[in-house]
Length: 598
Image 1 (spheres, rainbow, N blue to C red):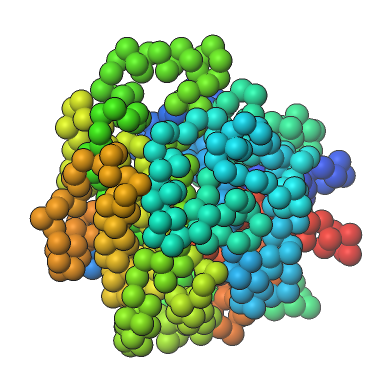
Image 2 (cartoon, one colour):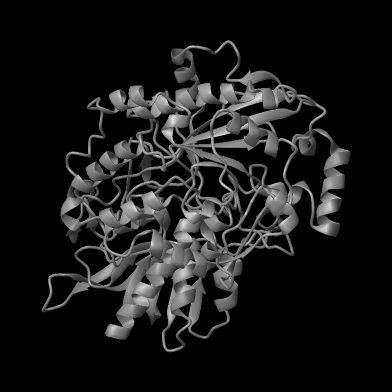
């Protein structure tokens, strides 16, 4: 059964972070009508979505998480890796862990060289500031050794950004341990200089201590506008096209979607905008006939535009962990699981005073480290010369350029290669369980610029069948070497004088796991991602395998744009949330500019 819905000027496919930013900004013009198609419902006000301390409770809930898994990964013992993606209004901004970090100026400026004019640090900073209102309590700033630079923060944006209200007793000792190993301290890493230790900021309301998201920041202020429509439980099938007589380019005329078992169509008068994220935007492009002709032919989909870059260039931050048993006289968040009375007291503290452990995530003591702080630079330089590259790199010049850029960054003093975070609790690790009653000191380690490149492609013309996500994780041996070096460095950290009274003994990987070969096995058995996929519809030149141009317009189309993390061509040394807010704000301005010129 087919049903046709009335037309809108703009149809946005995906009501997640970037989709809501663009739709909200476009609907500020009362003469413009905007519709958002979202496959999920309104789940942003569930208690588990609101309370910062419940940050992991929504994972694997089908109402709010797509619960994707990769294909079995050949270089990770054929394991399928969990890839959570937000489902529902707000998308991953209601599922994520709230961190609002920025990468270095070097990385953003390099993006301009890859993507085109305007995608640089200066412009990103403009839109970082536009998206946020930053609040820093002076007392907490002093505890964090945080000295905010007022020139780099927004004061009137819709998204609230704060320093955490709660930090553990381990926060500053961890920093001091790193300082003893030569790592500098960044009093404020939001200014584009990120190498060193520094406290993370989060998307949390300064007064209510509840999560702020694309829902609270962009959807709720816009939802009652007469020109703003959100169609829930609308699973997009494909974009519909025609061709004009005077152009070879495709013109997006509408979107086909499935709702309540019926196939429906909504017409677009001006543009269709894909904001379905790095896993589903390439899926929608391929279902619509845009992508690698070989992939489309395999599933009987007519090729409307041959773009081999669709679904290629997948990158994510790769992670593993280190955990030690801790002296019980020091406090950890393990008490929330081990001590019902203490957990109850913490909950009471949150409910009555908006203070305590439930006001923040467990991990706010960050360090971003260039290679020289944790690995043998000369050995890494030698390893990089190994001809191990992704099999697609020779076909897509743009992807090769991103890999070559990351090789240069491996020896750059201003570009971090490793994120390490002190977690005052047992860090969930595949194959390991905590001992009840124990307290733990964990170090989360994540590789910021993996050289391996993966893919996301359809496996069926049925839009309800998930795409195949193949990360090719650890395909490049340098990635493995860097993670092994990171674990050696974590051991150095816990053995410093500053932590000798805190750490009792190593638990994971375990003191008997010593050699590089043993650590490599551990990495392969425990590897996860940091849930930051990018690159699958990269903003690169058309001739180099790009999918969108510097206006976010899909090559070969007049009016189909992509606005989400999939257009970021190279991974950044930062959690992606803040960058995607800024990216979407900039894209909204680009669209508004095109309206004025038309």
